[in-house]
Length: 442
Image 1 (cartoon, rainbow, N blue to C red):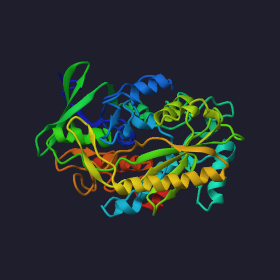
Image 2: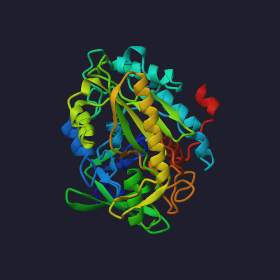
Image 3: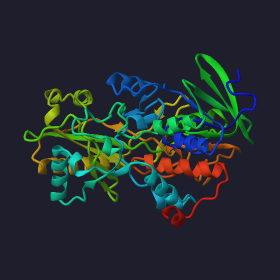
Image 4: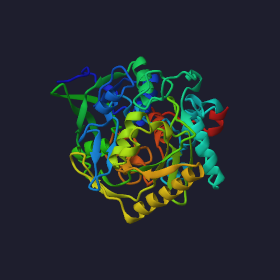
């Protein structure tokens, strides 16, 4: 059954995370006919724990376990994981990508000019965050305010809560906003559409096959952009003949380190990951990481720290996230077969000790760490191996634009990088001349 018209469309974008949403938005704004296929649901963002768990914590789908029992969470919904992220904007790894022929300086500059990217205003930095930052600086760490993807002017002191479970108030930017903009410019979005494989042959892609409402469909287009994430994209490529996808990747393991501060209480509207430090040479980063009560209880229960289940208000929490070594493979069904190396565990241990020192300097007691999670899987379809500098695979008309193309282990939130890559790819697809940096600045 053909979903689109016989004339087809110009571009099919598979996935609505930051990379796919940006490609769809940029092309739709240029008048291209764009079909967006998203496996997850759309609809109203309610910002409830129930909605979050249904879209980001379904075992075997959005919650995957490694052989080491490391849990990896991904959002499967319009906007992808950006709907639930902490909205922290780290710079793109420009030097790393230039080694592979990819220069994102102009696109990063454009994205920063278009989106609300800035450190928090002083009045939005909470007493808990201020205490942790001052303590980190006291022991010699270059702890600083971090850039956030937030419309801060929409935030008031009475704002109910940060959008951990999705933000119905539109203060936190997410890729869903770009999808909505693409649709407003004529793009067609199909939710519940799970792409199985790319159609065509090993020379050129002509369309995709997908399932929706229990039926198999196909759609054709001049270009196909796979942006289903570090797990989803390589699986689609494998079933499309690129069997090498999905090997030797990273997934940014993390822990949180907690302590009790009896003289400081968390606010209801704490903003997580608003300050931190990147320990580049040591291979890890640290940030504050306030959580809502339900998530706090899950983390405490995970390590059987039952005495802390109901001490949410006085829990100071830091996140330690490492740059893990490349390794492992994905199964054809999307299973994550990757183990932490001795070097990975050493970084987690070093990060824990650093976080412990920060908490101790802040006056925290009863310090403990939670279990290991993983975030931002990438490197499964690397630039320089399976895609070229324009993100094209060896199959004509077939491109990839998400965290899977990052060519080296990195260890930092990738959203800003993926937005810039999406801009660059859209420009390539319409054969548009890239503006020079000074033009963009002017």
